[in-house]
Amino acid sequence: MSLAVRVIPCLDVDNGRVVKGVHFQNLRDAGDPVELASRYYDEGADELTFLDVTASTGNRRTMTDVVTRTAGQIFIPLTVGGGVRTVEDVNSLLRCGADKISVNTAAINNPDLISQVSKRFGNQVLVLSVDARREKGERHTQSGFEVTTMGGSHSTAIDALTWAKRAEELGVGEILLNSMDADGTGNGFDLEMIKAMRKVVNIPLIASGGAGKLEDFPPAIRAGADAVLAASVFHYGKMTIAQVKDTLRNAGITVR
Image 1 (spheres, rainbow, N blue to C red):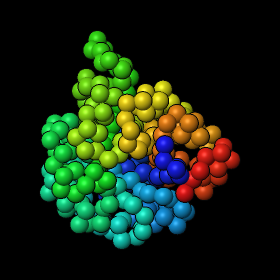
Image 2: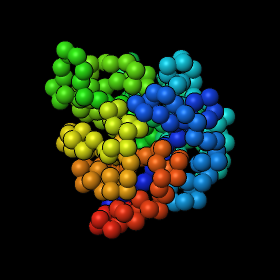
Image 3: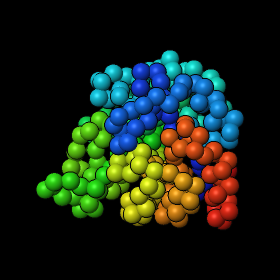
């Protein structure tokens, strides 16, 4: 675990607007990404994650204009993902102001992309987004957690833990672990999944999916996460970043 835990708001963007749903379905508008980014920066966010949630399914690239405008409003690390397929896509987004790039579908389709990006830009730039869920159907992975792609709509039958470990070896610098079962439910982080992932990777681990109340955050850190990420609870004013940090501090956890 890192010395100080990070609290990271996530902006899921579709067609230039922040959206949020449950299990990436039934998306509803949550505001302007630039305005929200600026607000979260002022509220004390440690980092910001920007995910173009329909770039992969729509077979298009991340909207660079929104990234550029967002980066111009904040002075904290900005991670951008969605529709990143090539080393040049990474280069373009870094030039737009992103500090880190998140990959998911493209890395599964071409694992060499991880080593190519890491060698050119350094592993601190690359975040592997793992949209994992408990297995469904007759196919079985060793851990019971499988990787999904295309915003959770496509099952890969790839073991999530095996994939994350391989990605670490290829040069990924951080794991963004999103529980597709918990995403948008507000029922709490998937602690079992976090603990399982923590056992197999040594790089920083961001827990995502399921935050619904302040009490949900300390258990995620105790389970092995180095950072906690949330979206709708911040977008719709259910809680503030400061409240999350206070809750973590009161639980004896060091925050930035």
